[in-house]
Amino acid sequence: EVQLVESGGGLVKPGGSLRLSCAASGFTLSSYSMNWVRQAPGKGLEWVSSISSSSIFIYYADSVKGRFTISRDNAKNSLYLQMNSLRAEDTAVYYCARSVAGPNPFDSWGQGTLVTVSS
Amino acid sequence: EIVMTQSPATLSVSPGERATLSCRASQSVSSNLAWYQQEPGQAPRLLIYDASTRATGIPARFSGSGSGTEFTLTISSLQSEDFAVYYCQQYNNWPRTFGQGTKVEIK
Image (cartoon, rainbow over all chains, first blue to last red; front, side, top):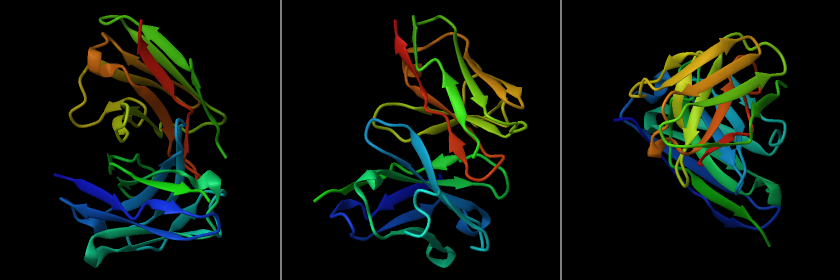
């Protein structure tokens, strides 16, 4: 069974940093692209970042470019999101999601981890 | 950036009735369009991909159609578990973009 489990969320002050992790199991992580999607409280889904299977291709939403860094460690079956210079508008549930390489949908999602940016 | 626009924002439907949800892209996304269902407090779940292909385990009452810029998700006979929020997403271009969602509520 495919499982994605996010961790690392919490309360952080504006300007602070946080590192999210996503532990993958039930499939071969190195065969898939991985993605982060966030959802602010009561709002819709917003794509944040994507990374190809071998980390060659990386994409960011303009809203996080220069502040967030996506990475992965296929040997540890893990995906990461390093978030720096956090702002109140980054407050959201952050989901990791899997996709097949190329133009493909997000076929499996984790349950999410809540990040709250507040003083 | 491709803007995805869903309508209506809220759809009130009685159990057993048909629901039709629309999604429009600001430019062509070919058939690279997915629909997701999100129940309260849950993660999104992939329902439809490539505009019309049901994901694994998705009941036949869910169907998708369209290509280019106009897409439709139809739920043929609403069950209690179908009352949720539905999002469309294009994966033809970067950045990947979602519609704002359609909430299907009990009438």
